[in-house]
Amino acid sequence: MKNKLMRHYCMNKTCGYEETNHKRRDAMKCPKCKGPVMSVDPKKKDFDENK
Ligand SMILES: [Zn+2]
Image 1 (cartoon, rainbow, N blue to C red):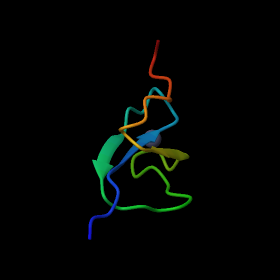
Image 2 (image 1 turned 180 degrees about the vertical axis):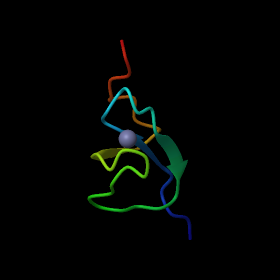
Image 3 (image 1 turned 60 degrees about the vertical axis):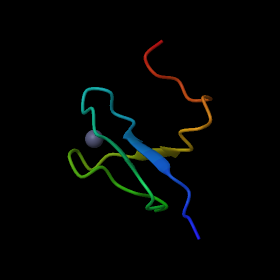
Image 4 (image 1 turned 120 degrees about the vertical axis):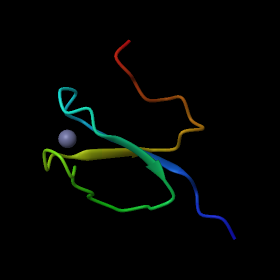
């Protein structure tokens, strides 16, 4: 059985923390700035990335 690969990134754009792994955590905090982290399915391209 496979866990879903999730992409986690910090909502603080000046921080730049980003990680892709199989861990799914709710209310995950950024290890760098302790800010909120967004988790998205990397297969879905519905997130905005500095466009
Ligand atoms: Zn951060």
